[in-house]
Amino acid sequence: MKTAYIMISNRHIHLTREAVDVLFGKDYELTVKKPLGYPIFAANETVTLKGPKGTISNVRVLGPMRPYNQAEILTADNFVLGINAPVKLSGSPDLAPLTIIGPAGELKLESVAVIAKRHIHMSPEKAAEYGLENKQLVRVKIAGERALIFDETVVTFTDIPDPTMHIDVEEGNAAHIKNMDIVEILP
Image (cartoon, rainbow, N blue to C red):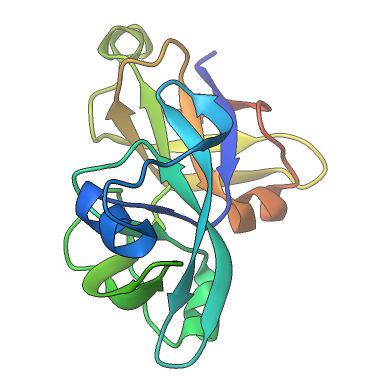
């Protein structure tokens, strides 16, 4: 059986060095609240997302800093903010605009908000063992009280030791699953 662990994420934001300088102050360094698997961590720092219709406060910054800014939001957040963030993989272009507000300043970004497309991180070696390729779409079976099958799940190659599927809180709640539950990858 081909399996993966589940990791569920809430809305959060990834920032560049330049964005951190504007939002928190020149040469500010993010501080670790909780490790999420080396080198990724939840920072103590938060920002406010502002759209044309509303705001969402206390959005967690994830570190380390990235080469691009990206706010990963939930589907329901589109209604609160008044935007239409697309469902795409992390790092994709052509995202929704938002203003990001920090304690030291704000940034109006034209392409920053996305609803993260569900995906499974795995090493090329594990993918070969499973007979999968990078960027391949697979289905994932969730067992339990609210069993379901997630279609359109993207395999992404990384160097993590165990296959790990990333979904957002809304998807996790729909399937009644929690972090580190094991799911089955279907052909």
